[in-house]
Length: 303
Image (cartoon, rainbow, N blue to C red; front, top):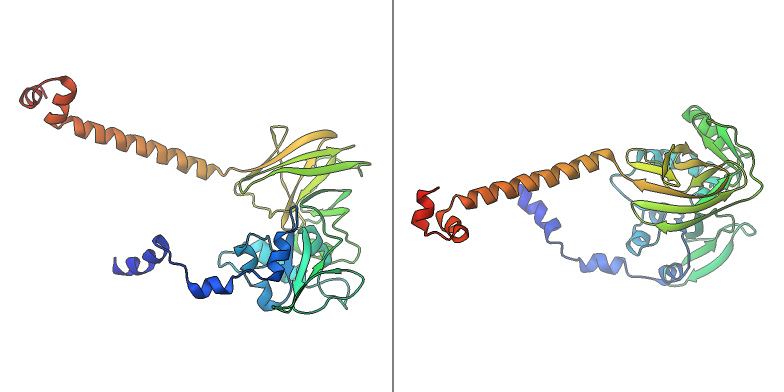
């Protein structure tokens, strides 16, 4: 009990650390990024900067940061793809960066000219923010699906110079139908919550819609116009669905069966507990007399 008290009191009654708050003070980079509209992520380039949680602290989506409970597939992607670009002079795999909706790269140095444009200079922190014009939106259609049945082949495709995340997606099982390259497509996120994402999508022919969120089958489900559809593991860490021809509403919901079961059991347990409390209170003569209009001794006699 003493051991639990020493640890738990820090979480039950959190006390802000002045030193911690000072380390997360907004700087010119944070101020600039918070002013930018739309859904996007940032890529903090560099060892210590990549592990920094300052962006998350200020509500800026980042592909970096530290967590002791990170997803294995994401860490595997970082180790196997992120820094294995096809261009020897630029080792970052920009296909991975682009498909993760990275609009800005932040680093304490310079990037090669021509591929990026300088968007902001933070003189205080000595950090540069570059705009990535090739960043893909959070959700987008691709023209074709490449089937790679095992992890080795998946990484070979993702690290290949011929792969283009804007037009192709690597999936790990055959598609149930042939997908042609649509002549016209559009996809717009209309609702974005932690447990639900809604997309207004249109495609001139059946197409594969990629969502730039981590593939997590233990809870996430997808629906097209209210009808559940299969989610495909895409580009090793993302998810996609096949959208029929025409305009549709695609919804992703986090609805794990175990959570619902636990929630229902909790509500049932509270109901049983309340019933037991009421039954117990009814056994007290004074309370029974108050509701029956009898004196306590009469209520006790008729108990």
